[in-house]
Image (cartoon, rainbow, N blue to C red; front, top):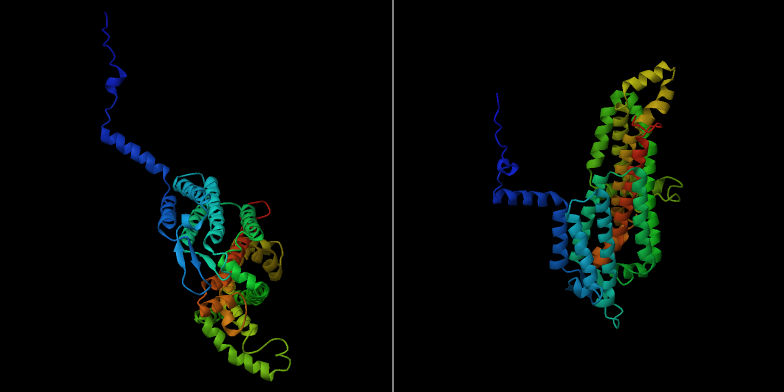
Length: 417
């Protein structure tokens, strides 16, 4: 019996026929997959900032209206096109779906190029025969800076660097900024001209700003953590204490500064030695008291939340080992609650760095002195002289405390508790 074998049709005969619209759709989908959802808007924002918005403003003096100049008009003829091409290249790479490490590098490279470009603008726009001429960054620079900052923060979020890597990155950024400042690259900008006139005052007010922010944080921690532990032990104290601290937190900062003038002025007049200690109605004393009052709620609330999050199994194990209540608190509960407590301290420090600026209105000093002087004189660059270091101090402090929270969240064996 013979079996007839049918011929096998060629593979091409069984292959599905792709229509041209399906092929185009597949090509478009592959292109879409290579674009980044955050990078594309950031790149478009950067292109708009460089092409449509002025990059630098030239003024005859510090307070008169200036003349806006675009990117290429603000830079030397030989450097402008090169820096523009670098910025466009960084923006184009940022719009693509790259690895997070490469995205961090692209964003940082773009920021460095942008800073180099704005430092060159005074040499082109400032008339050498006019010593009062001022050159300031315009809206295009600030918008481009925001676009690269968006790319940078998004890349960091995806990269998820550890605490050591974040601290190293912060140190690298501060080193680059310090190197640019030390070389005098920014000396022609109006904000640095304002600094040159007020260099001594700048550092003294900066020291006072740091003392107010960090001092109020230290006092609030020294008072708030023990009080939170007491409120944790005595539950009837918890609700009234949080209610009072919530009321204090709702009072506007300038109003609280003003409310403290009268009682502290009375203390300075009637309590022997109070005035010698610096306690008076205006100055650093009411500013410090107000900042401590504002700091108490985050410290107390986060300490209570941290203690509440301690597993009961850990408490039972400590009790089974024969620990007293004090030993259990110091050796088990507070260490396990430390990450949450540090998160509250981070909130306090960043908040107080900003609020210390307002303290200048009542004679508290700090970087707010330059901010309010600039507002009164309609001098934007004087405002920046106070605002920029405040932002940098808050950013650096938040980064360091974020790393401290990560370190506190890791047990000695390297696993989360």
